[in-house]
Length: 361
Image 1 (tube, rainbow, N blue to C red):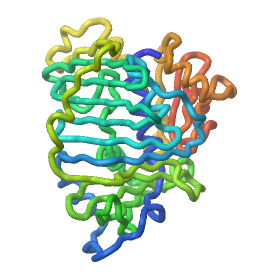
Image 2: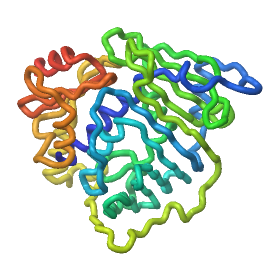
Image 3: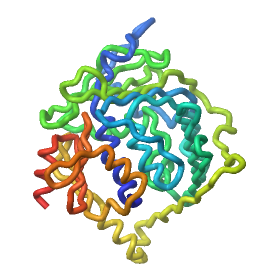
């Protein structure tokens, strides 16, 4: 699977997966003094006012998307492409440490092993203790995409970052309401619920638990249309606000570790457009096209996006089934159609809509 595919797939699939559930009714009811009542607009303003957090905590994630259990990803160059798919199956526990935009660490706890993603300044490390493999990327000094690895995948996908993706998509086709207060990691939180008005989308509703004191999103839980149980949930089970010890952001590969350097494509600035190379121009031409709008939108990736065989394509093959015109990755919240001609179309819509969008090209 090429890096072009890896760059765009999380952007298309992850927000669609996350943007499909309701927090109301699943998190524990609030305890103690109730929070002051707020309108949806006031809760959104509370979120907008929260600053880049310094914190440490434990995240619990669970998924019931209908995907098969898949092998654990390693730390090599394909890991960022396989991890997004593997992390959408089954339950996962992670320790999270953050201190501003340039210091972050996520430890995904596997059975008898752990995987780490560490950002410290412009250094990004990935490490898998199971096979003692590591991968390292040096980000450009002027890199503006400060929270992402070389494949474009966010290495600190905590509830506040997921919530930011969701809230950026609020548009007239969405109902926004505040449900009953909830408790997350022992902290009282507002329950902001987003419900698509469209009856064509697979998305049922979205809710974000918003810390009543700081405005920090503490949890996101999802349900697909017509389902009563969450399809996806991620929330803090413990949380400490304040800067973690600086030592957690430093990493040295253990003795005997296999280390791989990941090349990072240099970003082109607007005033460098005249000096852009042919590959850079090709990348711009290879960007996906979007048809439709709002919750019914469909993203199309051009032919050639999916490249030669790799761990990522092998995992994708395990999760797809043959359909007319290609193969389908189907979940409760998002469908991805890999066409026989090499194009890929995806969206939180039924298969028929993907096929109709593909037929227009």
